[in-house]
Amino acid sequence: MVAVYRSSSVLFIGLLSLLLLHQPNTATVTRHRPFTAARNPDIPLSFREAPAFRNGETCFSPTTSGNAADNTTIHIAMTLDANYLRGTTAAVLSILQHSSCPENMVFHFLWVRNEPQVFPSIRSTFPYLKFRVYQFDTTRVRGLISKSIRQALDQPLNYARIYLADILPKGVKRLIYLDSDLVMVDDVAKLWEVDLKDKVLAAPEYCHANLTNYFTEAFWSDPKLSRTFEGRKPCYFNTGVMVMDVEKWRNGGYSQKVEDWMIVQKQKRIYHLGGISTDWGGDNIEGKCRDLHPGPVSLLHWSGKGKPWLRLDSRKPCSVDHLWAPYDLYRSLKHSFEE
Image (cartoon, rainbow, N blue to C red; front, side, top):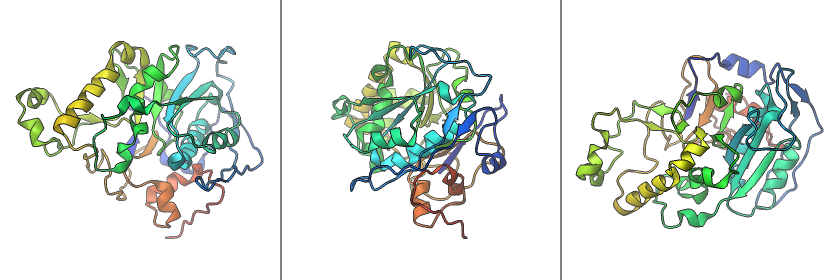
């Protein structure tokens, strides 16, 4: 499905702007020659080189020291692997393209396997991108991952976001985490400036799902667990888009708290992992086409099974997949917009 994120406190770019304006008004864009990434049998993808996006006149220059605590720098974390490399490049391009201060961003990529062509592809596609890479130690989640409805959710890299506070430099105080199957159609600075107040993180919240069948009998028959929702409106949030206070996460020991729940799930299986499916939120298990919400949007997220690049390649796209296509840097692909 496509999740659409918006805020009532700021003016977001509308879909018409997305289709007609693919470059920010305040940033300078420099074009470069097309680039073909080195081919590898395991990664048969080649990408065009992205333009160089420069800061607008109103941007503050980040410190030249590379200090992670520099408050002019926006830190964005994403996972990186060959299977989602095409989505990652599209997401990064969309973020840079709509940013008024693209040079003030640092990307933090987490990876698991040694895939030789992945990092060179990122460097060559985005030669001006500021980024760092971190290997996620999969032993952190060994024996903790429960089988889910979708195999993609069972991969250790999917859990790396839980440990961002431990992996990233201590100087990173605030962080945006983004999945690779999304595109940003507004200035990411607006997301960065979300007021967390005293909370640990902000994320898209869904409070309209019926969670009764999501939790198992083991949950409802346990007196302590079943009281979890007493006096509360049951909600869940999508971890594919998060703004995190890294210090509060670290100081609150939330990585361990999530691990504790993973152990409970492993022992009792209290819920169907990846099993929430609703009309407008949650995981699109079957990859069905859905329409967008009416009104302007800030971010488009293809959460769930169906990915836009796969449907476009199969020439069976959903209508919203064409909103992803302009950010696709895959060199050989020629999208067909025929009905």
